[in-house]
Length: 145
Image (tube, rainbow, N blue to C red; front, side, top):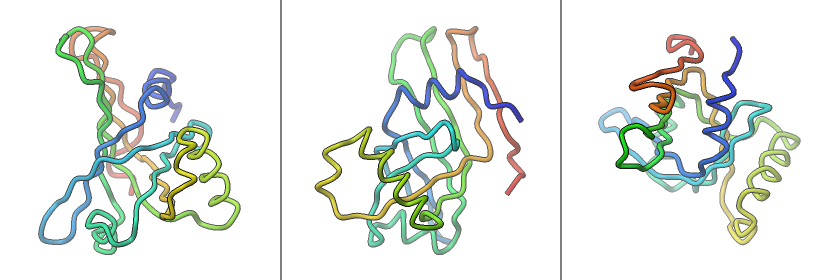
């Protein structure tokens, strides 16, 4: 399925996502800085193993994300609701590529000693009121994973 350029552009413009994980009993949300790799169509974020949202990945690696433009102007509302799979890089090559991509966006992160995570979307519902009130662009398949 073709990935819409409007979605790519929106995701590249922003840098904070809300990540929701589920630990079997309770859901949990965390806000994370991210770099978006539009060639690979995935997000890259940093987080420590000891955090609750990462611990919950042992229950399920399926996550939900949102990326929004904060605005009070209804005609400018934009946002993406995303279903994805979250994982560590598969190998050293993917790790180095993800780290390079993340550090390009957030150079000061070189000072951190934390884990790199890849978030691969399989469903995105993008809303952009600039295209018309409530205009939605759907990418992917919610039941794909």
